[in-house]
Image (cartoon, rainbow, N blue to C red; front, side, top):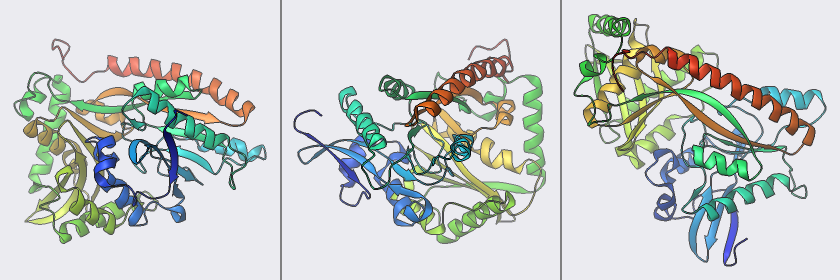
Length: 386
């Protein structure tokens, strides 16, 4: 530890000012004090739901110099980097995989800072503190492992230097034209291959033929009724997939009030009555697609509400990047391109650590081959430079 610095583990952000925390978080909406507080205060993320906050903070006197969002978890739900097979292997061998330590934004497969600090030295202190927690067998509840999900690549490499093992994944992101952005949606379509362009136009025509129009709402514009309708759609999506929703109406109402400028609620309406909705978060550079749902099936409505309307918003507001969420090879045909995403892992059991490390090496090779195949299938015209 650097002389004059102190590490503190906290289970709430109540004692840290919004200004001090957000100076570390920057303008990433998922790292804001308001976002984490909404998750925690509404009960969506708590010990009762299997996400016990154990945030590591780094202090120089009374000044906050660094932070690592960290949770003690007793399951692997809501993570999007799947380690269920690891947990099952532990169980079959008579070992406990849970609890584990997890650095992540709950329910959000969003790449961003995890080591909230301004210097490499301070980031190293945060990683070291997390690894000490994971290795400490004197604590009341020891853990099997420490995991960090969706860090930036530079942070992932710093974690690898600290002794963690890296894992690779793939997402699909839409990129605006670099030189000032696309003029309009048609300019974007013009750069796609003929087949992809034709399919998108067909999908959009089907939605238009159903008499559906769209409305974009910020948190300032969204009313209680708008949020209630959205949550009904969100809950229905989870029920349709035989799953339980993670977030509640109170959480979304809280975001609408505390982060209104970062929200984009897209409503699909027929005869001025909403039939579907999608929620996105954004800053000036990136739009993040998060949740969607519909009260009735309309051909093409999912792609229009979640993707094409969001792309239109990015073009209109000169937003450079649209992250459409986890997985989804179907996004490739709609102008999204594959990108590598990262996670970092440390396991206490040496034999399991070696076996999983070997597995991840082979998995990384498979990811590299898959990326090559996807890039060969680019939706863009071969005669166009991106």
